[in-house]
Structure formats: C-alpha cells, structure tokens
Amino acid sequence: MQDKGATFASFLRASGISLIGQIVYYAIYFSAIRVILSTLPKEENGLLTLVQQWTTAALAIALMTGYTTYIVQRLRTEINPGVFFSTIFWLRTGISIVVVVGLTILLALTRNIPPSVTIIGALASLGMARALTLRTTLELPFQSQMRFGILTLLSTIDVVLIVVLLLAQRPALSAVNVFTAQALATFPSIAALCIMAWRSGFLRAKIHIPTLRSILHEAPTLSVLTALLYLHMLTDITMLEVLGTRAMVGVYGASAYAALPLNILGSIFWSPLAPVLSQKLQHDTMHAPTTFDRYLRLIGVSIGVAGATVSSLMPFVIELLTAGVYADHTAEFLLQLWVGALSAILVAVQMYGSLLALYRETVITIGMLLVGSLLFDWWLIKMGGTSGLLIAKALSNALALGCAAVFFRRASYRTLGMRIVQLSAWILMTGITTAALYALSNDVIIRLLIGVGSALILAIVMKLIRMSDVRVLAAELKRQRSSA
Image (tube, rainbow, N blue to C red; front, side, top):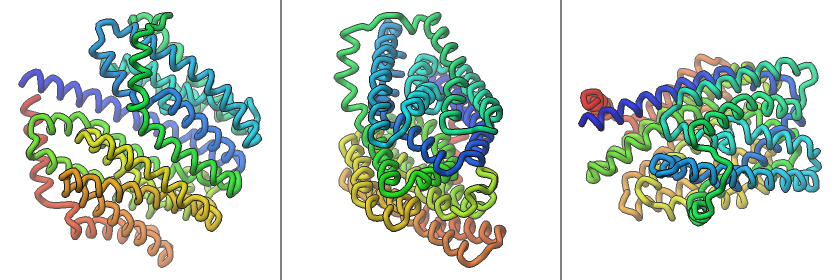
C-alpha cells in the first residue's frame, strides 16, 4: 500500500508541476499571441499559419511522434537507456534534415513560399516546447525520470525570450521575423537539454543498429494515429489556401487561439487521468466501464461549459487576443470553440480506445477525420470560406464520433457508445443556443447567464451530470488521500 501511495504522490506531484508549467507558459505566451495577431496583416498571418502547420505536421509524421509513450517506457526499463536514446535522437535528427529540405522545395514549387521562410519555420518547429518534434525528443529522458520541474523552467525561459524578441521586432514584424524569434528563443534550452542529456549518459555519438531495427519495426503501428491526425490537418489547411485565399488561412490561424482554453483543459484533465483509469482497469475490471463513463461525462461537460463561457465573452476575447483586428470574424472564433469541444471528446475516445485495447477501431475512428475532410472541405470552403472549413471540421469530428460510438457498442461497451452520442448532441445544442443568443442580444451578461445556464440545465436533463457523481468523486479522493 505504501508503494502505491508513493506512486500516487509522485504522480500528483508531477501532474501539479505540469499544470503550473502550462498555466505559466500560456499566461506569458498570451502576450506573444497578442503581438502577432494585432500586428501582422491577415495574409501574412496566413503565411505564418500555413508554414507552421505544414512543418509541424510533416515533422511529426516523419519523426514518428506517435510512439512517444513507447520511448518513455523503454527508457525506464532499458539496461542501457543511453544507447537506446542516442539511436532515437540521431535517427530523428537525420530524418529532420531530410524533411526540412524536401518541405522547402515542395512549398516553394507548389505554394510559392520563399525557402528562407520554410527553413526558419521548420527550425522553430523543431525547437519549440509544444511542437512535439526534436525538442520533445530531448525532453523524454527527463520525463522518464519524472523531472518535470527542469522542463517547466526551460519552457518558461523560452516563452519569455519569445515575447521579448517579438516586442523588439514589432515595428517591422513579419512571418519570417516571428519564426526567427521562436527559433532563437529556443536555442538556449536546446543547448541545455543536450548538455544535461550528455552528462546524464543518455546522449552518445553512436547509433545501435539492433535498436534501430526494432524502432523501425514498431513505428508503423504506433505512429498511424499521429499520421492520420496530421494528414487531416494538412488537408484542411491546404484546401483552404487553394480554394480560398491566404487571408482566409490567416483568419483560421487567428481564430484557432479561441479554443486554447479548451485545449489546455483537455490536456489537464485527460493526460493525468490515463494512468488512473489504467490502474482501475487492471484492479477492478467489472466496475471500470462505469468509472470510464463517469469521467467521460464530467470532463466532457466541464470542457463544454468552459466553451459556452468563452463563447458568451467572445467580443472581449477577440479584443484581448487581437486588439480588435479580427472583430469582424466573431463567427469563425465561435465555430472554433464548437470544433474544439467536439475534438476534446475525440481525444477521450482515442485514450479510451487504447486503454480498452480497441486499437483497430481507434485507428478507423481517427481515419474518419480524413474521410470527412475529403467529403466536406471542397464544397463548404467554396460556400463559406473559413467558416465553411470550420463547419466541415465539425462534421468530420461528428463523423468520427459516430463511428466511435458504433465501435464501442459492438465491443460490449454500450454505455460508452451511448454517452459519446449524448455528449456530441449536447455540444451541438449548446452551440445552437450560443448562435441564437448572438442573434437576439448584444448584452454580454444575458449571453453569459443564459448560455452557461442552459448548457448546465441541459446537461442535467440529459443525465450527463448526476448528484451521485459528487459523492463518488469525494469518496475516491478520500480513499486516494488515505492510501497516500
């Protein structure tokens, strides 16, 4: 019992540090967002968004970031983790160089993007703490040792430097200047991580061929979800630029920040919950589906209510984020929240599918996002530009969630399948209510009270929130404290 308590305490400590780190990071990064969105012309922000998404997606797919959990597990269990990690690092470094060269040529020929912009944008993506590429690879040894404090400190230093450099270049800010600021600001942390990894014995100037073979053997299976997700993203952004304008891409990139609170909440809720649910599944198989259902309901509603709150305050949010530059694009910002709430449920579906060993079903579910892009993007973008794309993304998410509901029911998880449908319907109705309120009233207080109130009442009526949940959660917290 004491070992379990120590493990739980360690988990809570690591989760708490990660939570504080995210809050600090985004609180500071908010200043960078405001500088970028209030200064760059919409077409220039479109160039920034296009290069960011292409470089991040191409690198994430090529570097096989889908097996990050696998790497951490191997680092914790390997007799000689230095050999394993060095092989991973140098493999990803070599792949990065090839991808950057290829992407530079591709975007120059097909999208008329200057090579310097793509190269510097790729360097920024490789170094940013939130890009899930080479920088994240360097962080994995310290994640495996639960040393989240040093990672939080380095990411905070990064974002402070980014804001300082952006403010210094604000009078002549452009997409390439933004990328330059990001790349330069991350260099000290990259250097520090390399030095610490070398001194800790994790990084060596060698590649272990048997390890390389095992990695390449495992990677296709473990990376397929990442590939499908990023291909969906690339299809959306490319079709918007081809069928619309680069300014539309700029509006899309700006409006994506509206869903940032939902993304942070999802990360805070779902990531720490995964090991808890995994333990529950191992020790109490009979009652585990009930626990899965409870967290799916409560976390889904929490994210949805947060979305309703931000929706009600959207004019203020746009003013804070963009200094009013995007005030005429309220509809796009509201649609991003709708898409973000649906995406948060889909993240839960991915996690639940992995925990319940529904791997094939999860892959097909995520594949439906790409199918949805191919079905909806081409005509909805022509009809509505950026708003059309966001409606297409919502439909793609709905298609994927419907597919997931069917798979859970067929796998004998009938309650989870029904709950996915209920949550999706609740998010849809909450979004319709928000739209109606904007059409009927200009009063922020009325929109806030009616929007959030109706969302909560509807959640209670649909039994997504229950009084029994409070008692169960309180009892579980008390049990965890006593075991710790």
